[in-house]
Length: 106
Image 1: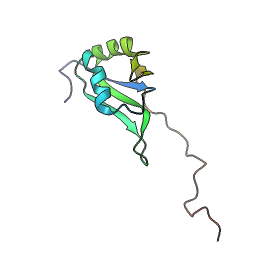
Image 2 (image 1 turned 45 degrees about the vertical axis):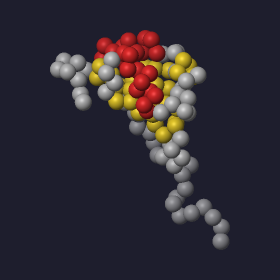
Image 3 (image 1 turned 60 degrees about the vertical axis):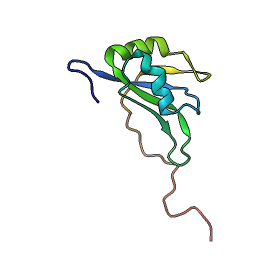
Image 4 (image 1 turned 45 degrees about the horizontal axis):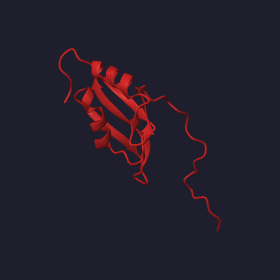
């Protein structure tokens, strides 16, 4: 895929998605703004259930229009949040995880 020379792609965060919305639904909702380079609804590793958010990648100008028109719009009965994705922040290790040696009594 990729974009034509001189055009920058922008990854958008799309939040508050219905748990029924899949990646194809997400792509379809954003196609009217331009060619969708990628669209992904994130799912839980263990259950496969939607986590209620995803990402869409569009050319810069198309992404700006999509943010303006889709932020706060209704998608599958939910008022979605759309903004430019930010890099994930480093997080400290979680303290609520077990030691891996089992948490049971003999």
